[in-house]
Length: 122
Length: 122
Image 1 (cartoon, rainbow over the protein chains, first blue to last red):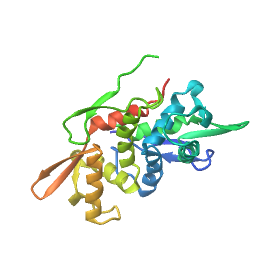
Image 2: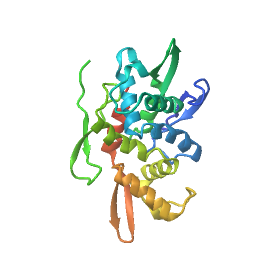
Image 3: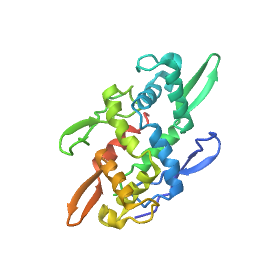
């Protein structure tokens, strides 16, 4: 009944800007621009290996993990790095270099925005 | 702290069986089988045109739409039909033929399960 404001989340491109994202998919037809932005995030999770890596990072102790923590997903370390980079580019993970390794962490606001997109109209 | 049971949703393959789906991605690493099942749904929404079609069906009057209701997504009617079929195969839409047209409707339990997958651990 009431129009909800779409969430504002960090811009996946640079992690600093703000982008309106992900109105509930059941509320009204998405505009082409909204669909482009939102599809990037769904696509990033639309691969089984990336999805496993994402859940591995998200559920790791202290909520962060580096490639050095990941060994059992059945792909090589360069492939793991490639997929983690894709997840970061989609705005789903943030990355911080500390010494030798890049540590990845879930971007909770983006997850919340995707969850919001999947809210079923009541 | 407490383990939540994953939701059980209709099997996307045939719409009749039941499949455990989509534990919260932040709870524990997904198993390969869980990741395969869940990635199918995210992948289906990982395309801007499919995402627009999905939101168009979901927000259409009475919660359903057929190809005959869809005209402004910038792709041909056969392409629209192709994408709607993909969404149905992923379990996100249900389909019912009535007369000339197939009418599509959102499968709310699957949406809820995907929303559950994106729940952030508190």
